[in-house]
Length: 202
Image 1 (cartoon, helix red, strand yellow):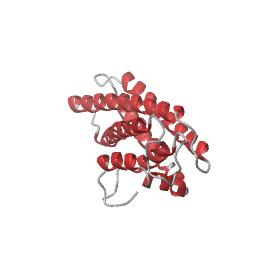
Image 2 (cartoon, rainbow, N blue to C red):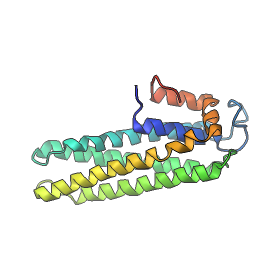
Image 3 (cartoon, rainbow, N blue to C red):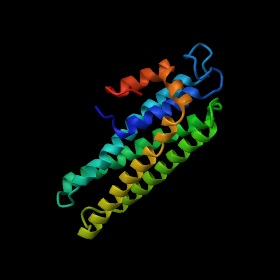
């Protein structure tokens, strides 16, 4: 079974959290000497993944947005706005955790972490823009052109999210130390397994 988009990117972020803090070698399993906050980082990742996937699913559902169905359209917009706000809170917490963690003791570790933080910040900006556009949209008085414009803008956000997240995938596929850290991290494997049951490997 193919993983959802956010689930695939989750593996990269978990790997970064597993490497953070500097104490243990990336080839060693977690132990009592694991950096402080390790478990909390995985909890943040779990919350982020769930919130982000919910918002992304809402964006996919916008393809069925019909302004003529006032009640149904308003329900979709309200759910999307609320889920975007929840995802934004989870993303901010995840960014804070990554930035406050110790150095990544792997090749190009700090560059990789910064790339991730930059991508997450871009997602926050795009989500904020979408919420502003939803707030400015009045379903009761909107013209067909205004409704079409909102739908186009939200579709563009979904595309932007897809490109931002899939653009991070090579960071994992080209760095064996990241993959090893993920495979050797029992804590993060447990979180990943609880979120995404899939037949393909990490």
